[in-house]
Structure formats: C-alpha cells, structure tokens
Length: 286
Length: 345
Picture (cartoon, chains in turn red, brown):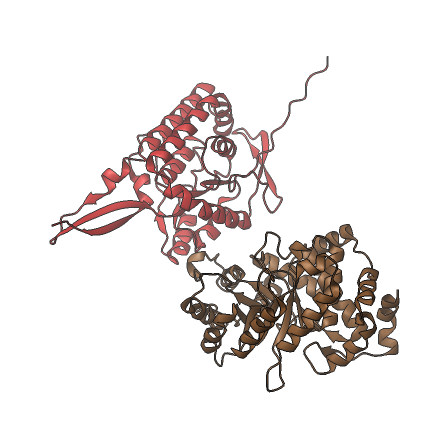
C-alpha cells in the first residue's frame, strides 16, 4: 500500500458566521518560527474589513440584548469546545511560536482558563462597574455599564493564541461584537478558533476574524464611522499613533498598546475599556 | 419577424423621431399599431406572436452586466445619478402626515451634512397623502407620485379604480403608479387589461389639458414566466403607459435584474418599432449601491444614454437612499460611513 497523502487545510476568514475567502482572492504564506511553510492564509482587504463591520453591527442588537447569564453560558461553551480541540491548538501554537510541545500546551491551557475566567465576568461586571448613586432628590439614581458597540481588535503579534483569547473574550463578554485582525505572522490559531466559535452557539457576526497585514486592515477600521472602539494591542508604536489620529474623527474609544505579559493575571482593564455608562433617574415612591 | 426587420431597417426607411410617451404625438404613433389592438383576437395573436424569451440567455446576460467594475469618478457619477432617480417611497398602513413630511424633507436634501447631494426624483405615497406631500415639496421641483387603482392587489371594480386615480390627480399627483389586474392577465383577458390601462390613462388627464404621467405596475413576481413579462410590457406600452414598473414591493419576489433587463429590451424594441420613448422603474428589493449600479449599467447597455435620466429611469426604493448616501460619504471623506450618519426612516 502506498503512503497516504495528507489533506491540507484551507484556512479561511470568519465573517458573519460564515467562512468566506478574502473578497480580493489573495492569500499569503504562513511559516513556522523557522521559516518552513505551514499553510496559506487569506490576505484580507479593506473590503473584507468593511463587510466584517457590517456583520458585527448586525449581530450587535441580538448579542448585547441577550441576558448576561446567557452570554456567559455561550462563552463557557466555547471553552468546552476548546478543551476538545486542545491537541490541535497545541500543535498550531507550537508551530507558530516555535515552542516545545509542553510550553505550547501551557499556553493553550492558560488560554482556555482565561476564556472561562472572562466568561464568569458576564453577569458580574455590572456589580463593579455600576453603582447606585446618592442624589439630592427623591430619585433612585443608577449607573449601569453597557456595551459600546462594534469593537475592532488588533490581536497581539507575538502571542498567537493566549494573547488572542485575552483580547477577544473581554470585548465580547460584555455584549460588544468584535472585528478581529489576527497576528500577521501567526494567524492560524486564530483562524482555527473561528471553527470553535462557529460550533459553540456564538451567534454569527459576534466575532469576525480577518487575517492579513495589520498595517493594511487597521487604518480603514480605525477611520470607520460605524466602529465604536478599537483595541490597538497588535499595533506598533508608529502605526498606533496614526490609528489614534484616525480614530479621533468619530470619537472612538481607543485602548492604547502597551507591554503586556499575556501569561500574567489580566485584571479587569480590558473588560472595562469597552463599556459605556448609562445613568437613569427613577422617581422614588412616596 | 416583421418586428426584427422593422428594427433593422427602421433607421434607413422611416427615420422615426423619438417622441416621449406622455407627449401629444405618442397617440399618433400608437395609432399606427392600432391593427394589433383592434380586438381581443388580434391582441392575443400579437402578444403570443412575440418571440419567446430565452430564459438562460436572459439570466446570463443580466449576470454578465452585473460584473462590471464601476469605480472612483464613474462611481461618484453613478451614485449621484442613482440618487436623482429615486422615487422615495413610503407605502405603509401606518403612514402619518408627519412621516410623509419627514420623507419629503429627506427627498429635498438627502444628506444634510453635504448640500451637494442631489435631490430625489419623486416621493411616492398613497393617494390620501398626496396633498400633504405636495404641500411639503412645494417649489422643490420634486414630483409627487401616488399609487392608485386599489394598490397593491388591484382587486376592485373599475369605477372604484378610476375614482381612486382621479382623486390622486385632483390632489396634485404628478405621477400615478397603477397596478394591472393580474387575475385578468393570467386568465388571458388581455383586452380587459388593455382597456383598463387606457381608461386609467384618461383619468390621469387634468382639466387644463395636461396629464399626470402614468406608470404601470406589472407585479412581475406574480406573472410566473418571462414570456408573460414580455407580453405585458408590450400590452402596457400599446395602451399608452409612460413608464413600466416591475412590482409593488408588497410580494415576496420584487424587481430582479433579469426581469428588468427583459422590460428594458421590450422598451428598446417598442421604441424601434414606434419611436415612442417609455420609461422603466424597477421597484422593491434594491437596497444597495452595488445593486443600483448594476441596474444603471443594464440601462446604459440596453437603451443607452437617452434613458439615463430621472425622466426615463427610476428606482422605487426607500432603504436604497441611505446606502447610496453612505457610499457617497465614503467617496468624499475616504472613511467608511455608518447608519448613525443617515436618517432612520
């Protein structure tokens, strides 16, 4: 019997719950840390980014309107699915970042744990970000955090999976929808994460994943009038500056990049960065 | 066969001068076709004698014309042209005078942040809202179009339909969108459809001798076959329609590129045979700039430049305008726009 030919995987984008190729038809070569070819990934264009924003906007109403408990359950489900695909992610992360199997496994485990950690925040974030305010009048005065809308996320360039999960989960758990630009050099774990999201009750459009050149995709997203916030985790200093300028045009919320140790305890910063506060005055009964 | 020869040799032999369907001369041109509309039998023979439609070829042609790439300055031109061709429509049971006035204001100045945006062609409302729209549009040059003849079903007695039409014209409508009796057409009573269109056209006349322009809605989604669409297009044009319109927007299947292409071809053939220029209005289901530009390409390739004006081609649409405005903003600012920057209708 002859040797079997293995079947190569065609990595695709994830937009609106579907797996399209890039509108431009372009792909680019993804290599491992040593420069060996791994796969071709779609090289998204600004039109893919535009389509992803439309999908994210369409999904926002349903996702932000779902109960916090329900969103939490959906995200737990994602963690369950990740657990089942652990081996695949371990080998993808090992290839992408040039890690040993055991180090890659530690990264994937940390990523799954982080996903669960953020999922738990869904119905608790209002307790720390909201308040009952004392006012000088017969009113209940309540401030409650609300999702800001469509968040463009530039995923970290180095940490292809743990870093990715650490920027997606906090954005969507509070009810935002996200357009994620993957790590440019290591997009494969992100594109595989899309398959997990598609099979774990996350409504189509809540997370949209684009692979390609960060410097090409980020400017139209930063200037886009229908994007409410942008996370610059994956932008270098020079790019980040121009993106902040572009984002100022429609007063986008901007989360500036900084040196982040993705393995450390994340805290609530990213969770709170994409929330708006709504305050209601309600007459008190006599 | 006669038609094909007529089309091929017409420029050499008769040199027909183009006359608009709403003009005085059109009646004379139609009279030259009087033999085919003399009686029920003649009309049936004529309509059934029209060449059958090659459905696969038609769809392929429409799909091919949809692949043109229209960019930069051409796109900017197409967007402005499309805006100027819109019949901005509200046909809901819940229409209020306030909503109609708001729509009129939007029609006059579609993009308040950019005064260079052209105004729309017309505002399309139910007959009882014509007076409101007329008042709101006073002096703007935008037409008021009114649906009539028991829109959208068309299921009413002829006197009721005519009264409906006269009401709308008396209230000041510049254009009347009538629906044909699909039941009569599908059961083969072509003459009754023909007579009805003629009568409604007469009802469009104003006391001062002018007349409201008549658009005839076929509701192509209910006509089952492409052959029927070709037949009804000829039927309506022979009866004196100024415009032929695909659909009401109230059924599942609305304007599609193949059906619109077929109607454009019918208009082209009718023009070649009689010299009468008739307009076309696809309506319903056209929501994006991309779709609108596909239709404009189709008009240009089928009928040519004389039809690329709001006088001879219209879009029946409501949500299309917002998408056109967002694309327009993208072209002028370089930033993708969003629904927060256009009105919620």
